[in-house]
Length: 215
Image (cartoon, rainbow, N blue to C red):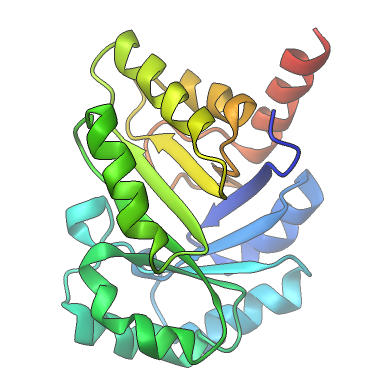
């Protein structure tokens, strides 16, 4: 397992941050596309509840979220919190906003989520493209069979720079537990309400890791 693997608690309610920290999460992800209210107030609630680093994410509908705006609208929504969080998740479609995000000196997670599996050559090409602007590259695919899982593991193992890989859906959710053993930096879990199908809870994932490492 990557010695740098960290558990990200993806939240739909910032008040869950305290519980996430108590359960053992390393980082909080605030899914602003799944929350109502002022993003500044949401961040403040999170900071009052815990001391963990924060990822600010507005996931587009095209990549599994609930944000339906363009890059301009995305920037308008994320801009107020950029100086207050530790990471900003940026999909390729919002790449025109990168210079403004970098002004805030916030680390960037360059992300791509797809409802398909990608061939190995395409995965490596995508990683190179995302690495241009991302401090951490996050690629989440939807495997169709076990052979796809093997290719995703091989890809993850081959990338020596910070990378997070994952799967969409519940069919191959076991890959979420396997990929950290081959170098995936972040594992996205939940602390109450799932933000994606197939997510483990923080508590269950920690228990699973203990069994896999010490069993």
